[in-house]
Amino acid sequence: MTSEKSYAGWYFLAVCAAIYLIAFIIKPETGLPVIKLFSRIILNVLPVFILIFALLVAVDYLVKPVMLLKYFGKGSGLKAYLLSLLGGIISTGPIYMWYPLMNDLQKKGISNGFLATFLYGRAIKPALIPLMILYFGWIYTIVLSIVMAITAVLQGLLIGMIDRRWRL
Image 1 (tube, rainbow, N blue to C red):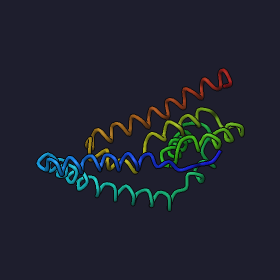
Image 2: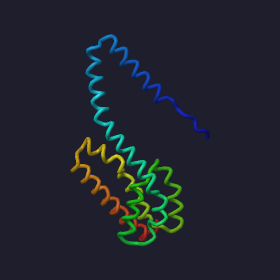
Image 3: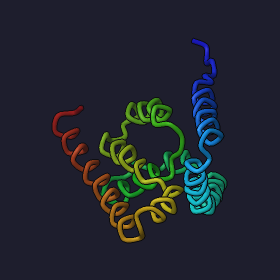
C-alpha cells in the first residue's frame, strides 16, 4: 500500500477562497463583515495557538510517553492507574499508532484495566486546555478535565475487574 498524499483539502480551500473572492468583488459590502469576523477570530486564537505550540514543544522535549509506558502498570492499585492515566494524557499522535504497543503490553501481562485507563486518558490533551479556556472558561475546562480523569480511572478499574473475572 502506497501512502499518496491527497490534496483534496487544499483544492477545497482554494475553491472556497475563490468563491469568497468573487463574492467580495461583486458585492464588497457583504465581504467586509466576513473579513472583520475572520480577523477578530484569528487575533483571538493566535496567542492561544502560540501557547499550545510552546506546550507541545515542552512536553515533547521534557517528557517521553515511552518512558512512562515502561513503568505504568507495573504495580497494582491507584498509583499504577494514575501513572497509566498520566501516560495517556501526555501521549501524542493518532490513537491507532498506539494499538500495536498496547497489544504488546497486553501480551506481556499488563492488565486491560491499565490499558483502558491509558486510552481513556488520551481524551485529556494539555495542549488544548488553553483553547478550551478561551472558548468555555476556566470552570468548565477544569471540571470537565477532572471528570474525564476520574472517569478514565473508574473505567480502568471496571475493565480490570471484568478482566480478572472473565479473563478477556
